[in-house]
Length: 312
Ligand SMILES: Cc1cc2nc3c(=O)[nH]c(=O)nc-3n(C[C@H](O)[C@H](O)[C@H](O)COP(=O)(O)OP(=O)(O)OC[C@H]3O[C@@H](n4cnc5c(N)ncnc54)[C@H](O)[C@@H]3O)c2cc1C
Image (cartoon, rainbow, N blue to C red; front, side, top):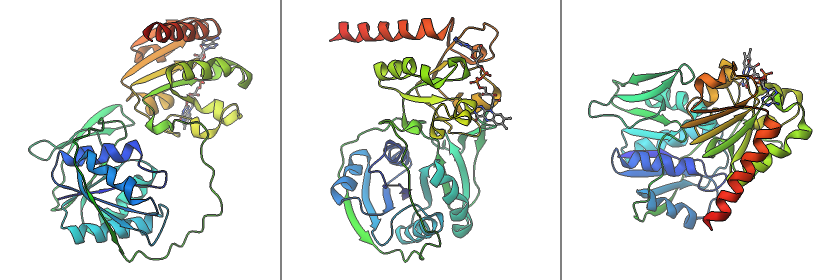
């Protein structure tokens, strides 16, 4: 039995479907979550292979103490020997707590399903290398790196059971929350257009947004751009920002410093646009355009728009 924890604060996210798809490859899947998402939405996880969703409606949010208590309770209740969840911010804070409570080894940042010997590939050193990890404990926890697996619909149905895990009261009081703007959450985006200091100023981001809109992509930026206030902090990718693994990452006017690459080098295809042919980013690129962003980007956007128009 495989137990999957999903965060349903913003509905059924792509990361949840990925985690259920992943777990389905290991065995029968039961999901545990909390909060007030309606049962009809939770039932949709049956399409990805879950047979049951347990939901604790007695608390909301993703306080790691409460969530780790709930998962521990559900693991014992369901008889699971493996717990899977997304290697996102909640996952990273829940995983070590659960590991201690459940006396279970943790495979953090998995990018593959364990092989017949239980060996799983994980990203290490900010994606610069791949580790092969196996846990020796009877129970194991796997946190799955977002975008490592495509959600697969298998066409099943699942039941929803309301439970009370007895989670303790939260010691954290949330005073306010601010949601990132933009319709596509960066960690879930399959296409990302990102820009750096080469754009010269915030007033020039129109060409980046237009390119992103033409592709239906999310926007991102380098750290100095967020630090100076040209772009919001939630767009900052890299070692100290969000780590992403989109199918396509277009980097415009970004030099490709090691700290930036650490957050984006898991991208399937990298396209770099930079005036400097010696920019380090070209070494990590699948496709490179040596040229001025202010000339290249509008032309690229036009080309994409006319390609799409011809498709219709
Ligand atoms: C501890 C630590 C953590 C860090 N974490 C991060 C992180 O998480 N993410 C991150 O991004 N950085 C991080 N940094 C900063 C990082 O080292 C680099 O300084 C930063 O990534 C550089 O940002 P940039 O590429 O936008 O700017 P620059 O290095 O100034 O590069 C601008 C690029 O734009 C090009 N360019 C200029 N004009 C044009 C034009 N008209 N058209 C096209 N190209 C043009 C230039 O050739 C240049 O390559 C970190 C640094 C430290 C010390």
